[in-house]
Image (cartoon, rainbow, N blue to C red; front, side, top):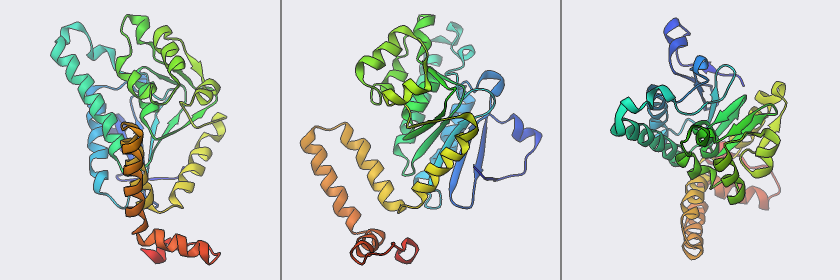
Length: 273
């Protein structure tokens, strides 16, 4: 995926825990940049992620967010060096709260978030894949909620995992800590697409381009409604969905899309804005 960085590359940038790139189309790429630690989610990295996505709630220019990892892995979960018992209950609790807030930040964004996964995604790294709206993985990727192997049940990763993967499959991952391969992850619903490593960027780009061809307002409304209705009963979900569609129909781009369909032509989104 082609992208231009916001600032020139430098030694300081290379050492930053998070790299932020934006291309002219409005695609923001966030690269977890701790390859020596397999992109483990340190406090510094989690805070950098929160700081990077915070402005996006009101950013009409950014259309899609891509989350990826530098080096050999997507993300190996939390940095266990920051979870030593010497950190104390409060310190460890603050780390999990920070991670949870970031996961909720992703849900609250109006932009779709795509995980570009290679190598391994374990524990909170697997959680991150599950929390993203979409995920594209290389065929050599592996996924696990492996905390139980250390005596630490992956309770926080279980939240998005249980909302993506059927219950029996989620419990198998959580109880055994065993890895599943990319093909199994796709079969179980953890990722959308699996391709050879050489085709990973092209597959992510195809998904990005497809989203960019759709009206931004419709996508933002739809994403917000989708996650809200998941937590509702069916009657409330239908009421929310109907209200969302009424709002959607008032958008000029939607009116242009309907009119274009009736006139049997391609919609001109730019003209409607």
